Image (cartoon, rainbow, N blue to C red; front, side):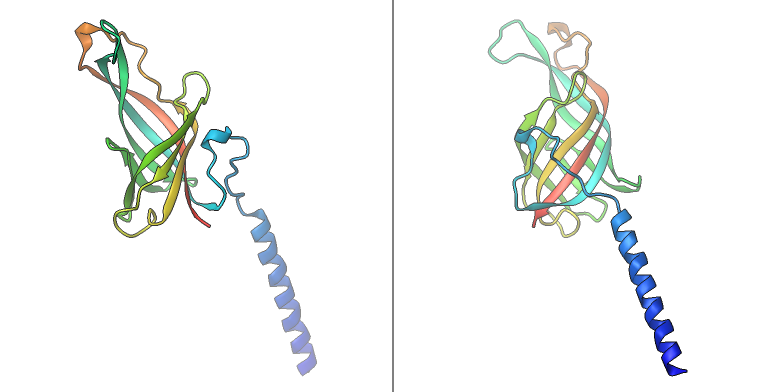
Length: 184
């Protein structure tokens, strides 16, 4: 009788192991940067710690072009976006200036731009930034790099920017994935 119970118990353990193994194989694949331009790829020695989707607006201000008398342009002012997990749960926000990523747990950080690369007509470029040390303790602690990928919209307004509009501000809608990396 004891042998039957032992065999049944061992069979149950093997079955559970197989289920666990299948769950791991069917888990969502981690972000791959293989298709991104080299300039915005995160250096080796880092791993993805969090994937988010940012949705919101970017504001621009009409200003005189530097070193170009009589010419004007829309200049990037800053973002105002919510950050959500891949499943849609709110996990933080992205705002500026200065560009700041803040987790719902209160930890936040700023970063320094390393590189940008074109992301297609009508879309803000892909971007790689090197994170400054986080303020507070939480999800942003230990983040080394942030990538902006899968961008939609966000380019400067198409409306006229001239001497009569200097100082005017306009917002545009955008969406982008923000991939957070930490040292391996």
